Length: 224
Image 1 (cartoon, rainbow, N blue to C red):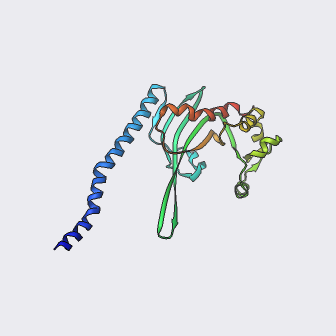
Image 2 (cartoon, rainbow, N blue to C red):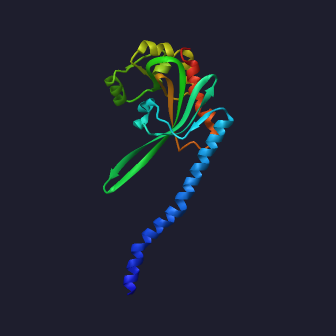
Image 3 (cartoon, one colour):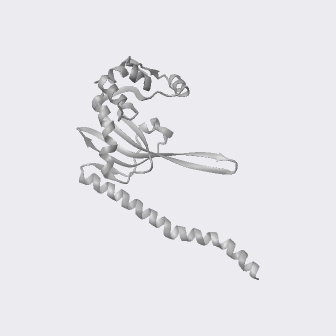
């Protein structure tokens, strides 16, 4: 009889733990998420911005992981007369080792700044490895050396129109990259995009201007 009771307890215990988790932990997580999004919404209203819990712009295809459903909390407003989007973005990867499967979620802050016109695809990033170079050549993007030996040693401009790309990346923008402070960026259509790794989602709305500042600075330096 004792053995039977013990066996039943072992079988029932996981279900008891699951019920406790569902009735205590899950509601607490939901409350924290509601409080987080409410704070973002209140900040947006107080600063003349717009908040949306998610969006699906076409340029997500150009972000790491290409997760078209990866954008979460999004804030849209104006900085220096330019329309700016600041959004949290994530995608997941899965790896296996023997019988163990691990899922990792990668978090980013994406900033999109609307430019005054459409452009051919252009990107600036630190000099990539040989595999990345091959991939860009495969998809029609060519490097556009600037003639500045310091900039060209550490950064690479890729574009389907190298001459146009060089006209956008002038001495002031190259200097700002070399001296630090500017993230890698790309232009998709009429929007300038940056995608910066972060530890999680947007929790402090007061950091929105700090997130957006470097990308807006790139926009201001285009062609200079």
